[in-house]
Amino acid sequence: MPTDQRRFQQEYYDRHYPERLAAVREQLVHPLFCSFYDRLAERVLDAGLEDRHDLTRPVRIFEVGCGEGFLGSAVLRVAAQRGLQVEYSGADLSSAALELARPTLGDDLVVGDAEEVAAALPTGSRDLFIVKNLLHHLEDPASLLREAARVVGGDGRVVVIEARLGGPQFWVFTLTAPRRERYFFLGARRNRAALEAAGFSLVHRQRFSWLPYELLFHIRPGWFRRLLSTGDPAVIERISRLDDRLSATLPWLTSYVVWVAKRT
Image (cartoon, rainbow, N blue to C red; front, side, top):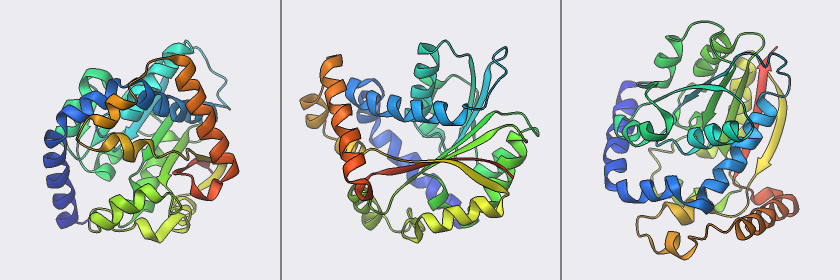
C-alpha cells in the first residue's frame, strides 16, 4: 500500500474505533449480530478445512486486517463448539482496533501493514490465511496474496471474503468514503485476477447473507441493537433461515462472496 494511503487508512481507523467504542463493545456480545458472524465462521471452517486430515495438532489460523475481532472471535467460538483446537493470530493497521480485539482474540496480534506483516511469517506456518474486506483497500492485492501463498504452503488454504457490488448496504459506506473504499467498484474480477496472479485456484465459492446485518448494527446509536437484542435461539434461528432463503432466492443482492483458494 502506498505510504500516503497507508497513513490515511491508519489515521482514519485509529480515530474511528475510539469514537465507536461503546457500539463495537455492544456488537461483540450482541447475540443476533454474533450469530451472523458465527454463520460466516462456519463457512470459513467448513470450506477452508474440508481437505484437512491431520487432526492431531491445532489448526493454525492467521487473519490479516482482523479489525475489532468480529470474525476472529466467531471462528474461535465455532471451533470451540466443534472441539477443534485453534492457534489464532492476527494483524491490523489500526492499534485502536486491536485494543478492542484483544479481550476476545488474545495477545498474538500485530499492528502493521498487511503485506509487511505477512512477509514476516515463516513459510508454511499457517493452515488458513483469512482476508476479509481488505483486498478492495489495496493498490496491488496480488502482492499480499503471493505472501499468503508462501505462508500457507502447498496444503493450506486462503479464504477471501469481500463485499459484493450487489449488496446495497456497501454502497452507503463506499459513496460516503470514496478514498477509504477506493477500489470497491472495480469489483470481483479484479480480486479473482489477483488470486490467479498469486498462483491460486478457487476450490470453493459461496455468496453469503442477504439481510443488512452490518449496516443496521454498525450505527453508533444503540436503538437498533436494543430493538433486536433477543438472545432467544429460536428467534435467531428463524432470522438466520430467512437470511439463507433470501440469499438463495435473490443471490445478486447478497452482501458477501466467500472464496477459498489453494495453490496451483
